[in-house]
Every structure is written in structure tokens, then in C-alpha cells.
Image (cartoon, rainbow, N blue to C red; front, side):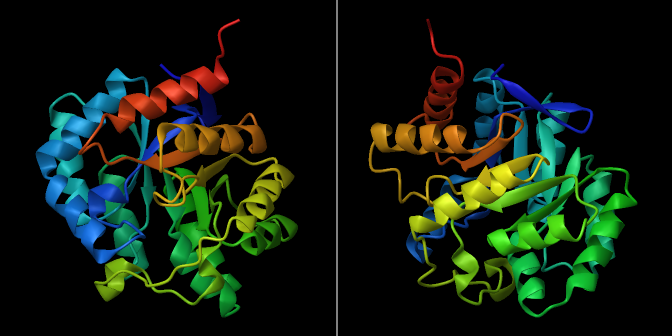
Length: 274
């Protein structure tokens, strides 16, 4: 298994597979999103998850929606053992019902969807965010807060919100007002992936003593020009997050074994041979 850190009582690998590709959410183009949807049949999602197990990844971050619930049921009935960190699905209302659905499928942790966090934060609806975090807390699972905005983490820390971990995007794509594509049914256009954002979020991640799961370290394919650019992004991430943190990376193994490549890079960076 790859190197691990603690999330509550669980040991999770420092490389976690992210679920955006499984759900056809590319953050690049409608064409790529549709290509992901076409590739990721239930069988190919399960194949990818079992490949993760073979390569030493023991944790997945996936949405809490009916599509994922169905896949999860089949994956586990076939012997799948990966830990699941669940993202709330904003298209399911009321919020409490979505949490109940997620709990039935046995996650180890639940985090509040980042785009929704950012929208509520911008409107000053801090009490609503705290109310939702409280609902997660009542499940007994680890409580996470997702965001693309460093200010959210800073505010949550200053005001001692009841959070166990942060799901932190290294690009502040919430500089523009956004609504989840799961709600609108179409991809957000012209999302800002500004390189200078990474420095700010990595500094914010280091400023909290709580575990952080850093995501979009590859800029939703913008750092995937070659194996070397992928390696550079991984190295930058591990150098700038804390020893208790992990990275979350979406993988699309249609053309090459990204699961193996990403696992190998992680192993080489974190456990270099003397």
C-alpha cells in the first residue's frame, strides 16, 4: 500500500482517487465530459477502482448520488474494499435526505460540496453552512468542508467551525460565480485556473493543523501535457502540503494506465530509494 495518514480512526493513502471523471465532470469542455461519460460504464468504474487497490490506493472520493450508490453496491458486492469519502450532492434536496442516503452506503467521512460552500459563503450565509456541518456531525462520521476559496478555510479556522478536515482546491475557480454542473446540467464556462492561486491555497493548507485533501493539483488536465508535468505537479503538492495531508486526483485511464503511473509517482516522491 502507498504511504498513509490518519483520517479519524482510518488509515487513508496520501493519494486518493477523485470521482469527477466517473461523473463526466471534466472542467475542460463538454466534449471531454461526454467522452468521460461514455468511457466510464459501471464496469469500467469498477475496473478502475480494483486497479487502484492493486496499485496500493485505498481511498476514493466520490459524489453521494444515485449513480455512485449503484456502482458502490456492485463494487462492494464483488469484494471492493476501498474507503469512501463522500461529497454531498447539491441537486438532492432537502440536504438532510442526501445525508441519509449517503450514510446508508457506509462512507468513512462526508464533506460539504465545495461549490455550494463557496456560494453560501459569498452570500454571508455562514449559519447555513454550520447547520449543514452539524447534520454531518450527527452521523458520527468525519466532517469535512469543501471549498475552492482560501478565505473559507481562514474564516472557518478563526471562528472555530466544527470541522475535522478540509477538501481544498488549489485553484480558486470560485473567483467567478458558479453553480454546480449537476444542477445546471451543463459545464461551467471559462473557469479561472490561475497558477498564482496554488501558492495561496498551499499556504492556507499549511496554516491549519487539521488534515487537508488537496484537489485539482493537475488543474483538471492543464498540467497533464506529459508524464514529467504530472510528476512536477505531484512533487509541488507533496512539498507544499503537510505530512498529515493527502492529494485527490481524478483519473481517466482510457488511453494509458494513469492509476499505475500516479501511484508510481507518489511512491517515488514519498519513499525515494536511497
